[in-house]
Length: 375
Image 1 (spheres, one colour):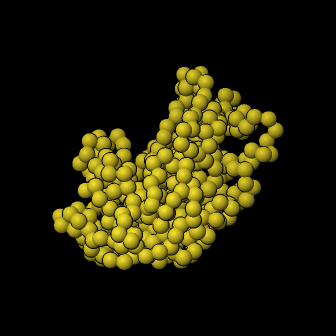
Image 2: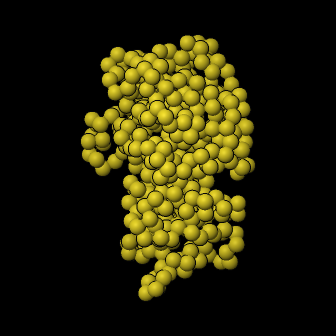
Image 3: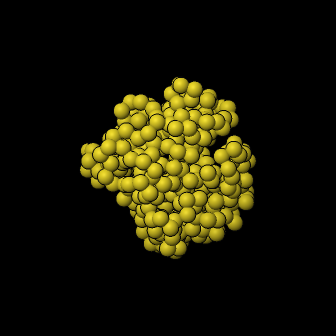
């Protein structure tokens, strides 16, 4: 069938809005009509050419929401008419990783997903008879897409597509990093580096669990108001700090008898390896945890003095906020619908597919938190 898509023909070039062909779902697959999709920094990272796993030509997009319109043989967990969110981190519930309960990184289809292909080793998308690569197993920059059954989360039907699509990546990644990866406790002191779409969700995750001190760090002064809106208690612009940022932040966290200082938890949402080091070293001696969320460029390395780790600080990474997609995503949708978390203010721009490149421009200019394409 013919579908409309924004195709990444090559790295560093704008997306081309065109008609592509989409084959129907095979065994264990579902076809979804995408109703809305967010434009995420990860899409930009791949489009820029900095992603070592980036493949072209491809249909990008991984933050969507829509309706199941067809299912292949053997599909039992969803049916035509179900509302779903595509999952770039699937949950098969049977692979060793899923069964371990130690990670959300399902390995059932990792090999083919990383090759831009469906589990049978082929693509459902084509342009002028030539295959197009799938992206992160989702390809939501098309108004219809095909996904493995294990890569869709069924959600409630009253949830608005143009808001809950954000749960497909940004919301879940930020809030999940707090709840699942760091397991932040009430009363904790935390520092969030980078107050974009992920960082703001980390902040509201910290507010949700009852963190006492939430310091936001960003070089854009406009982010102060945004951070405070979602629960930030203190704001630091590194450009306004004289000298080293780390001791400045550590001093902020000193309280009462605790004159060592340092945050119980820090979160890097920048992808900048220098900031990752600062985040670790701003942690409390003996127990501080620093969670890396931001994706660094290909070949980048992080470094610190071994003393920082020997004295009890912990570096952790997280993907999709440690969330198990089919299990946790419907719950986060419920949190939004019940008013426990906010999404609407973060959707700063909406647009048709024909304007998707403008959405990337807004991201580059720092003028959007999240732009959403509505089909």
